Each structure stands twice: as C-alpha cells, then as structure tokens.
Amino acid sequence: MKFHHAKQKLMEMDLNGCMVLNHLSHSGRVAIFFKIISRLGNGIFWYVMIIVAWLLQGLLYSLQMLYLIVGSTMGTVIYKVLKTKTVRPRPYQVHQLIRLGDDPLDYYSFPSGHTLHAVMATTMLGYAVPALLILMLPFTLLVAISRMVLGLHYPSDVAVGAILGALVATMIVFTAPFFNIML
Image (cartoon, rainbow, N blue to C red; front, side, top):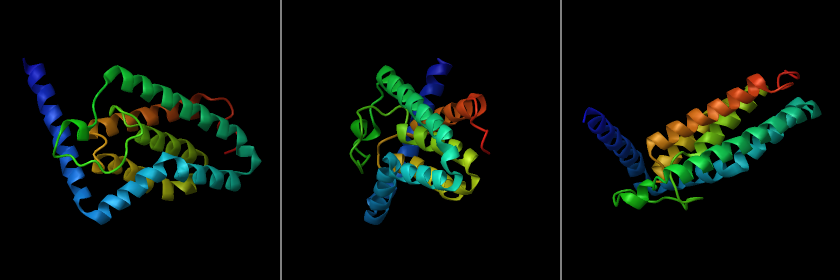
C-alpha cells in the first residue's frame, strides 16, 4: 500500500512540474522561443556543433565522429524500445490543462529522445572540444525545458532521457578505442 501511495505522489509531482512549465507557453513569445529551441534540437544545432568541432579538430576528428554516430544510433534504439514498451501517453494527450506547443515526432512520451540526444551529444562533443560547452550546456538545458513547456514530456521523461544520454556518452567516451587519441 505504501508503494502505491508513493507512486501516486510521484505521478502527481510529475504532472504538477509539467503543468507549471507548460503554463509558460501561454505567453506567445515564450512558446515561440521554446518551439524554435525544440526544432533546433531536432538536429540542426547538433550538426552545426559537429561541423565546428570538425573545423577546430581537423580531419583527425573523423574517428570521433563515427563514435558520435554510434552513440546517436544506440540512443535512438534505446529510446524507441522504451517508448514502445512503456507506451506512456504524452501530457497533452491525457491532461486537458496541458497545452500542446509543437507537433510531436512520435506518439509516446517516455523517455525524451530530444533530451537523450542533447545530453549525449553535449557530453561527447564537449569531451572532444571543451570550448563548445559554452554553447552546448545552455542549449541542452533549454532543449530539456522546451519538452515540458511545449506539453510533450513530463519531468521524469526528461530526467530519464538525460540519464540515458549521459550513460551512452560515458560508455562510448571511456570504452571506445581511440576516442581520446586526438585530445
């Protein structure tokens, strides 16, 4: 009985966190800002960071780029499997008070793929080119927040996405042969 009560309390906190952040989208400017952040987080921002890293590191960075592709593929497989196994509906689908601020890329909420990839890319690219962290850390935080402001994810979706992204990146950075060779 205590477990059920604790689970219910966590679910309420998750919804409340989502509602507080989603309420920010009632301001048109805030909604547009986070929609742009979310869309840039679909890939454009990360492609630019990869190109900048490549320009700063030169062709020697090519092997690290392959590891980034492997990490991205692993992250995609992990979050797609989890989404199809957990089948958690998105907040806007379940709660009428949650306003949808952007079109979802898929149907389910758990975990946040945007956050997973943002944390993974920031960790890996930041390890290779620490100067890029000045741009990537704030952007990654904004991507994570955008997912809740736009009504697409609960805080727990974002938190688990961040943890998974960090785990994938850490595993690759510290176990992949030659990742550190050019640093």
